[in-house]
Image (cartoon, rainbow, N blue to C red; front, side):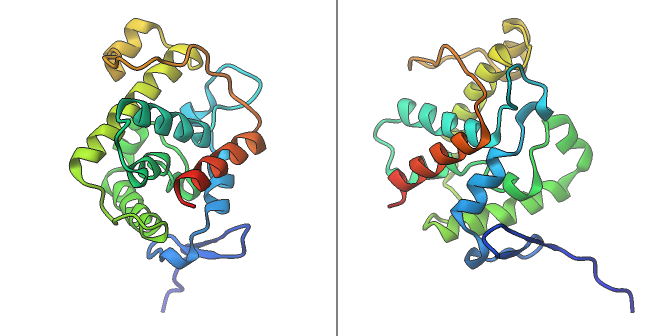
Length: 195
């Protein structure tokens, strides 16, 4: 009988997260924040002294979501902050790579997302309308990142991510920061949204 390959990862908290069958009890916000603070967006192809991390992106997406949806309950703000949380263990892949990997990536992402949501009191699946609002903030964040730190022209960004249609004030400067500083900001925002 062939030995099953290891499908779990040991976290700094000491938890062992089964990637194929994740359970909410094996998920800790410290592990998520730490992992996301060290995962680079844009495959690390950004300007600055530090990579622009998924944690930094997540905080920005939550800010944009909340600004565009000021009446949104805190649970949906939390869902926006955690929208890329599975990437703390599976990494961030640019869209062309996700397409090449195929549906297995999406299925793994969905299982991890459901476990993360349940761990922090969210429904396993976010309502479609809320998911669309979070996606709009995510695309706006991608546009800002692309034009400010990833070397895209405004025209390219408009073509790939859509021109900003938002009436909310947009950040004028994105500056990649040290991972531990970003981790602290991510956890602080989490604690505001999930006391």
